[in-house]
Image 1 (cartoon, rainbow, N blue to C red):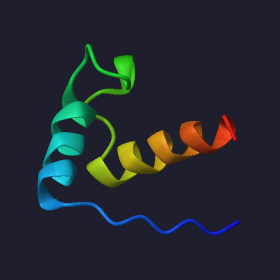
Image 2 (spheres, rainbow, N blue to C red):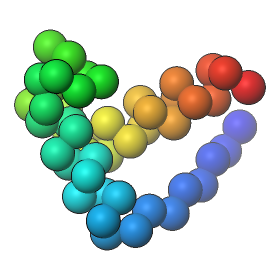
Image 3 (tube, rainbow, N blue to C red):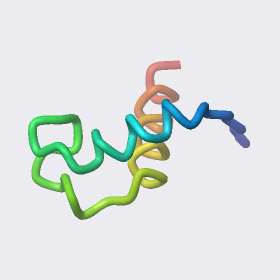
Image 4 (cartoon, helix red, strand yellow):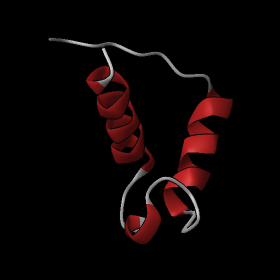
Length: 50
């Protein structure tokens, strides 16, 4: 399956902040992942629910 997503700059910047937030979805991994990795993980989680 191929998934293509388009994000606004604002959404990407929010992902950057969330990837660094220890109270966010990444938990202990916060600060160790890039915004791109964070977005990929969120897409994977969303696709698991399909």
